[in-house]
Image 1 (cartoon, one colour):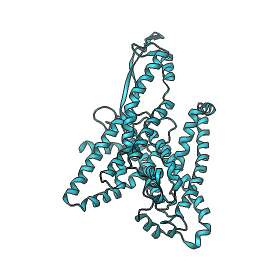
Image 2: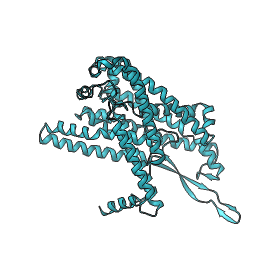
Image 3: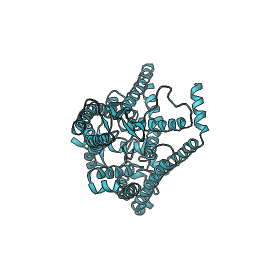
Image 4: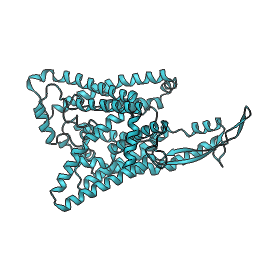
Length: 449
């Protein structure tokens, strides 16, 4: 305990770090306050009653509400949250990989990145306007339509689209400010705060549900918490796990001094793709649910299957898609040929492997072997909420047993702690870990989260 208080004291003693923490907390508080403000033309009491009735808490709408920190179901001015910006960022990131012209622009340095960022903002506005129109249709569906104020209906569509678009741009601005003057990745911090905002209520609901079963129910609740902690520990191993490929650099004499000859390692991450395969798989799985966006309860067939996360067919198809997207995204962001050329240019080589194409083949083979278990584990993480729901865990609490929410939370916490540790070590303080240095996710350049 003394070690903890000493670490907190050291953190607060660093002016730059203290300023970043305070700025981040202030901007996060601003976001949470905005998420509680209801859209013009909606009765707050009626929308609260619709929320308690459970409207929009399943499937596609439940995921939107989770990322927005409950603002979606509350009909808040920040109901769309940061998701339109993430969608636009992912699209632009894929385009920079697939389109040679955008690759050239990205390699122009700071000016090229500024161009792509500006195009991403324009695309965000387009995506936001489209999603805002769909959200208005959702608010006119049974369950929420009763909350609309009749006298305001003629102006509701126009004012809501404008308000939601402005709200998303404001959240995007908050994320950029956290990135510039705060601590951690701004977009990831906002998503994590939105997810964690639902955690206390979910725990209370789960505790209340199990309390009704008597003492045995409370024991089950404690077992669920222990399983959740175990899953988080395993996910930390998945996020930080690497396969180290030994690399040796040839000795050189430059200006009378000997350089090189060092033995280093090329780290290959078990989960190089991060959370992106899960996001891609969810996006594809959500497409059928868009057919019945405003009336999911009456959906049948494949729409019903894809809207039920505990359905066996859903989990099977979802797992296959996560594994496939993991290999696809890893192939897009990891280029063994470029790594081989960089090693050759810097007089580096892998012991026992010839430079050039043999090195490329070796690195690619290692990457494929390490990606397979990583993809399977990532697919397992994605379907764990469905298993938890099948075993009797309430729907809200089951989302924290895996999937995108838990993966983002673990990754963001590790990134933030890594930055704090870097500040401590730079000022000659002890790090957060007594054994070794903490490793973050090392997110892909240009990735929004």
